[in-house]
Image (cartoon, rainbow, N blue to C red; front, top):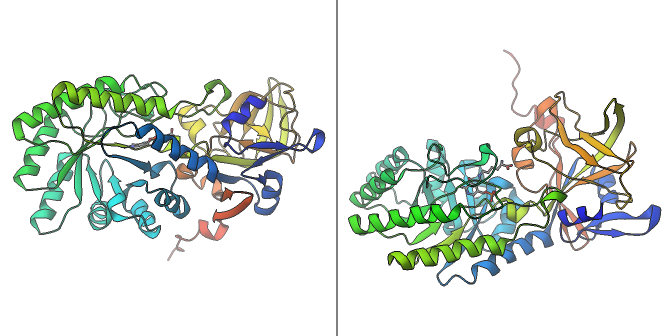
Length: 438
Ligand code: LLP
């Protein structure tokens, strides 16, 4: 059972012996936190977040040119996480006006706000022009809109063009983005046309971006994508004289969600693959080395997050033992959407051996509301707490109010102290936007 601890934040400990053994994270006792803040409850461990940044910084230090780390805020964005990103001088990738507003409220430096979006609304584009340091342009229609703004005298931030490299990474189909039929980015021909347009209108075009997909464990497909990118850059340079000052191969490095995924995928291997490939590829084509940007979301925040649930009922059906939790698909849609596999530990006596398989179901009116299927699990009884590791990315960010559920509270755990960074939703929040019939 205890290999599961390696899925949890780096500060996860079992304190006490025998019947009083309990799971502790960030120096905080999870039983106490649940009593004080209720469940479902999401926890972020600061030490784990900081260590993840350090892994990227360390891996990038071998690159001979300038480098940058952009936190992909789509993985999880709130005021505190944006402030944390700023405290590490991370850039912040914002999708649209909502995330831009959070980044601004958190005091993120304008130069470090980077805006993505596959079909940015006029409001998104206006917010980006107003507040961002970089807009990553997805398509030529968007570029035309930016040209219209520039022609009206609006000063534009730096523009990077997003290329569709024609190669995706190995992951769930819903998370692949680099393939030639993907809705994201420009083809090579469109990229060249975009550079010519930009030059004709004197746009601040400074970079190339591509992203092949999310949650992959094998960096190999980045190789052919980098080759395609650098071949294109060589053509663009010879035809237009333009060179990319900034190059971003996006994010997408995977994490371990289940004990079968351990050991944790190595950030050093992933970044090393990109850094070496880029240096070798540029040297081979006699291209200047661009600044290298990486754009991780999940691999910065997933492991730092833990979801804490209370078991309300235990039910036996002919072939299953059900542990029915007080949260599920409304705070974590990933099992229902991608078939994602998770693991869990009881909070009290986490080292107990399994008494057989369990299905951890949520409370919602949906048979697909099952967080974990067929997991070896101790004999957990109603009223007990279970902790689900690797819950820091794309849970709260994708959460809903299905069945009138209330989004959980979120805590920041740091050296034995727990701070509320997002309060639990209330029933009043549910009706905040509603108006009565006339
Ligand atoms: N950059 C771009 C342009 C992206 O589209 C994404 C993720 C990232 C960076 C960060 O990828 P990460 O390092 O977090 O894997 N909801 C899915 C993941 C969707 C990813 C969307 N884009 C999930 O829960 O697995």
